[in-house]
Length: 349
Image 1 (cartoon, rainbow, N blue to C red):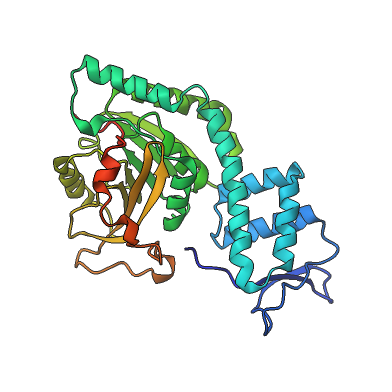
Image 2: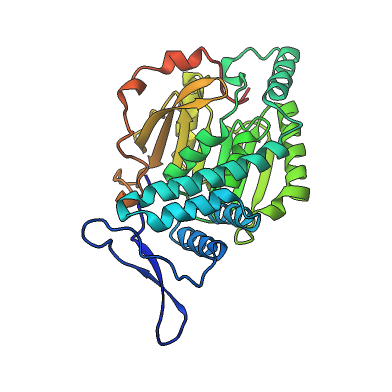
């Protein structure tokens, strides 16, 4: 989980009259937060809290923007969250951040759903099946499936990518995971690579719609770029990626080996997310493993991180996605279970 901030208190400086933003430990006994300045409205308090959480990277700048939209609409859920914030002790502060994150995800999901209203899961399956039948492409690796918005947003927050970093989806279908990454995080660029032309054309249409109508809703602090490329991800250079995703449940062993070889070109500290099957590579460490619900059912999620060239780990102990969820007992032998649901984006010839 993300590191929790020190207690935030806002007090008015008696000399200047300006608000002084401090971080101080909770008093002995876990007393509630000191009340924010009474001169601030609930909306002003919420905007200030959102800004401070974004500065500490406990929410993304896009998340801050979604909260701002809720605040400007005077959404009653913001009032409840602020009441919880002001009355909570330091030990409960994580619950407040979780509540704000739920609000962010709900707002982002509404925008995402509107963006994809003319491109459903069934549309993607139909496009994939038609092209595979016409081209007599029988490989299991091309079976279509989509991520769940909320599950994938949660997975990305495990990594907490820095603003301006680069995201790739290998076998991106109609672009669902690409746009979860776009809305949920502060990536500088999100790119999808899809081999099936019909799916790639659909993703291009969604991207044009995003650029013309939805891009302006996101934070101006990042370029909010989205690109899609039609072709095999084995032929595309994604070595500049910071976070790589492959919906690999139906990928065969040969394709997984080829991905591992290509992933070795990533910089130390880069992350690779796979479903059901982990990378068989000495160049990576597995930081996290847990089941999440997707469009076809539960899938085991692996988060790998590129080791240094000398084989040592990139030390970021506080930010590691690995926590108590790693290597859950329920995750040990679920590869076959995931296979029966049929997932995986279109991948390669």
